[in-house]
Length: 370
Ligand SMILES: C[S@@+](CC[C@H](N)C(=O)[O-])C[C@H]1O[C@@H](n2cnc3c(N)ncnc32)[C@H](O)[C@@H]1O
Image (tube, rainbow, N blue to C red; front, side, top):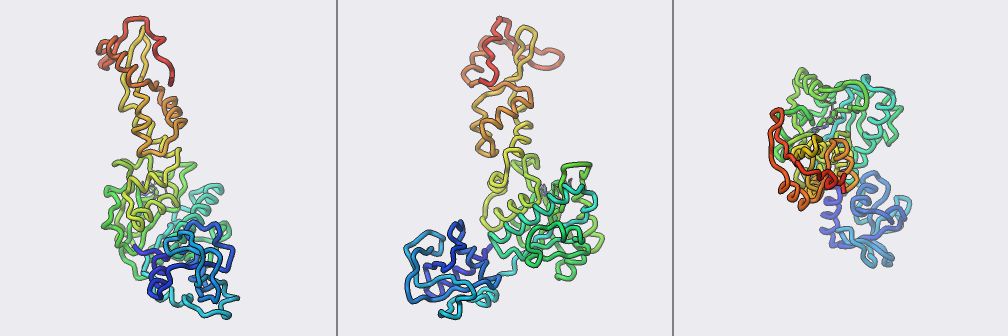
């Protein structure tokens, strides 16, 4: 899917412009200057013009630094002094029909004040994410009351804030089918879903009380109003555990898959925080446990080398691995030490469970996480 930067690149290339600078300091630290310039133009803050002298420093259309250019972004107050090359209307008429990304606040009243604050913060972050790819205007918040408007600490005029039900908003937009991001869904989100005109994320924060299974209720409400809701989950290697559940991170995963063409596992990895990775690791480690009995005491042991394996798809640092081991009461030993333990132990079934029993007094060989 094309980004806003792609649209601007297309226009510039067509006009034979391969490098562009800026007569403004605001892009100095920009990671994505072409997108950031395009955003300013879309919001009517400036235009790209032809200059008489080269700028000191510019970017090529991939955002790499180059020496200078005869074309530059200038703020609106300066545009009239130059020959305009790309103005707001040039961009607006070529914008693709990007989907709507809707945060559904149907469950707003079930939240504490702190949680409401978190929802608002995550909504602002969603706007920021959408600006990195499109314009930010694609974001809509439904069931939004005055409290939300007061608490939302971002530019309200640059998103759609709708105070009624999501279904009503969709009807007004002429949308009768959506993708609802739902961790309880049967089906996994896939490329086939990226043709949807709207993606709905539950405006839900789970830090207190029980909001379990509240997302499917959003789907029921939509279906009741005649909107077809394709319920889709995001998984990491087949399971939702380890997938970050914050509203903005879910949006980030969708965008990485849809726009950047990343696989679901890659997108989840990039949006994961060590906290989510540890949730998953705590479920994974027990699968590798070998139980040793030494002098009547049980030691649950895994290979230390598992860290390298798991850090390929979970965003864990060594300290997260150690924390997950402690939380699950597991010891990690080097593979060669486990081989040695296997040589000096014998399997035995005790109360229906298999242990490797070490009869020798070798407990000292088990060094806690060393
Ligand atoms: C914090 S979650 C709330 C989940 C809610 N407690 C529930 O049980 O339905 C916020 C929103 O993120 C989205 N979400 C979180 N994890 C997801 C996953 N693994 N797959 C798809 N959507 C997810 C859903 O739209 C959800 O409503």
